[in-house]
Length: 147
Image 1 (cartoon, helix red, strand yellow):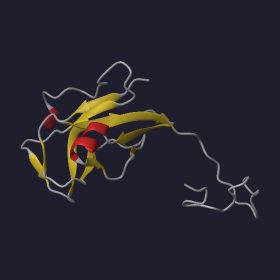
Image 2 (cartoon, one colour):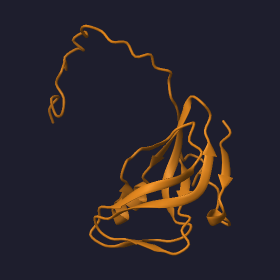
Image 3 (tube, rainbow, N blue to C red):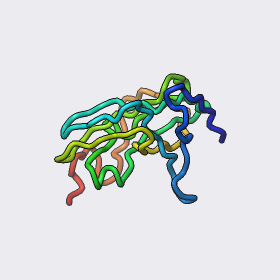
């Protein structure tokens, strides 16, 4: 798959999304901010990447948290995984939230999230009168299988 990306002016000089290592599943997304922004505890912000993408039909972009940022600073993607639809052509922005106890500064070029591309199946929705029992679980949800 080839991911076509258009760089906006405010992303000039920043690397395109790339894997941090050969075995990495995600492509790192970076903050395309002009000035550092401070994300206070409990606060959320929409961070620009300065990138627009053309994702092939039948695919989606999944914006996921970076584990190190979440673990070390408590910053995560609020709507994880965020979805970039194949027909979206606007700027990709990342909704971050600081769940940690200290303010976190996001600077230009910081790796703020990762992008995974995943196939999306064609789905035909069919209304039915009843469903099979679904095995042992049945209609049990939220903790019904035990601890």
